[in-house]
Image (cartoon, rainbow, N blue to C red):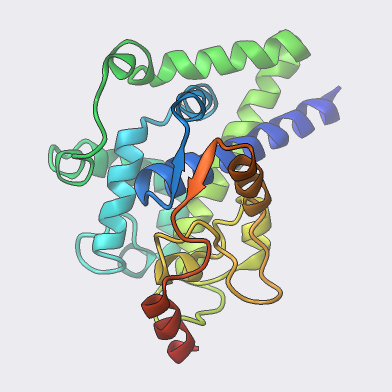
Length: 248
């Protein structure tokens, strides 16, 4: 049972990473995807019960990161703060930026704060309790709690790694301060291909070259085939592609 609990927690973290990259990152923050309304709402629910993240806040902080990447104003730059601090305190850095009274108002103007947020999604603790109760229903109270705690540790560690490791170590084929780390991409549904993402933020597919693998892309292709999502750019737009090629 301990192994099952740990595997369940890891699977839950991987699922949360997938929804984070497809919905929070590619759809909401960068509009590289457009989801059918029903699917988008389902993703809001899944993010709520698996991470407790408030989508407007996450998108706003991430957009600010792109506006000031690794310069003064970046809320979680390892170049300014050190990669270990970003890795270990990433949630604190996000909360500080999201609740500074400026970031959300400036960078999430296009994302409405609706009644669903006010009633449900703004209450992070409630969402996490719902998620924990689901795990307990399948694994029992003890092992469900173990799975839930392991899920939180894995998810936070991998989220922090995208902002710390993927701005410090790895390949930089394009001329930006982010890096490509394929092993991290396998663990974060493609987010480890971070240099590619910073080179072309509106591109839904994060793998640009032979040998690069974006684990979320087959899921996005399936959603597109089902008619549940449309893709803004599958490959980098011409100018961005040329710039990336020159930098390589």
